[in-house]
Length: 465
Length: 112
Image (cartoon, rainbow over all chains, first blue to last red; front, top):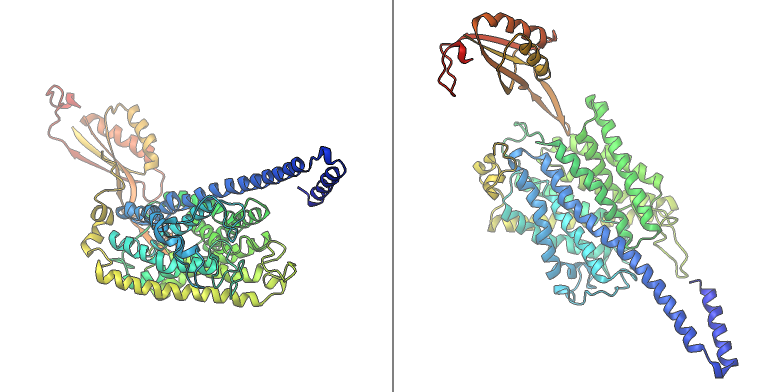
């Protein structure tokens, strides 16, 4: 309700009360106003909550079936279930882990680098809002929404070690990774008291709307370390290893695209205009990158491919993720166009120069696209879309370089550098640990036979029966 | 009795089948096959990696026919399966000693 009308009503109520004390209505009028205000707040809370619950479901859909199909189609037939299973297993494993410990490590107020332990076993995570994160959402909605991010991030890494890692080693490594890399990074960027938190006054405010550094840089860079540490697949690169079904991958990528609306527009943590900005930018970024990857391929190979188109779309979605709630739609198209060409170059050229076997290009798309997107966010962030920095009187300050705030680009580099360092160090240490205890790779003959049979005792396709 | 084996382009299957029915061939077995003769394969690109596919999808037809129908059947296949381009396929003909109908132990050309 408009504050002036409220004041007027209050004044009226006061006058009637004092003029006609015998018929004093003060109590009931004030009650009615309070009741109305409560109803308005409840309506807003319901609207926000509805969108955030839908967004949570959309983000879960990105992991299963989205990522499972996208990655599953790219591997050879003998590994399709094992690859899908790695994504699916995260939906179960990380969920339990989140409730036990990692939500607290990410979002409890703790040090600048990691959250505290007050929310272990979801203690104190109830249905009333935590005003530091949102004034309208039940804290459990916020918690479950953030959980979906924690699920997809380690699942993204699985693309780097596809077709050769033991299921047990994968599970153990990603549990430890979620605790030691994801939770601290999420805390630094989004948690209370985090070093990089732009909306809660962090020391080096990094603009990361929906997880360019937290999700994509960490998973992509860790993927590169995994590919280097585990070594190449048997037969790579001499043996042909074409995707066994680009059809599955196209379906998966399109589900990722749709799910990404929950990922980015949901990161507004409300159903207002900021969600609209993020939604529009997400779509434009994806389209721009799909187009530029296809064009690059068309020029170089003479044909635009379906796999190229969907790889570009994912690259664009990755790059627009940190920028989604900060930039103008035309900036989103530019970010998309740049990301498509840049990731194409990383996947087609740079991977071959260095010779690492990043099986499904988790680094080339997520690491490279996430890093580029985080830098471009510093360039294109506009306070007209999201006035995140304010002076003491609450007036908006410039956001990114387009507003004249070139310093923000430096802040972005601090965030990116921290994400790279924590990912490299964390992944190396954890891989070594898992290597020494359970061992990382399946035996050579198991790898040749396929992980579906040797790790899970089943086959993806049995057309004879 | 003679056996005719024909390897043809998959896209020609319906035309060949119709042409054979027209000259009175009543039974045949069809196999989905992969292979190549002098025809070279093609190149596929996946994220910049190049793969040469030299075994191409083909259809293989097999039928055993009485001697007097062999030439008619061959002409029917030739006219319906030919596009004039490399990769149209081949026909092989061989003698068959015996044919037996499983249902009633009938033997010889009447079992066809």
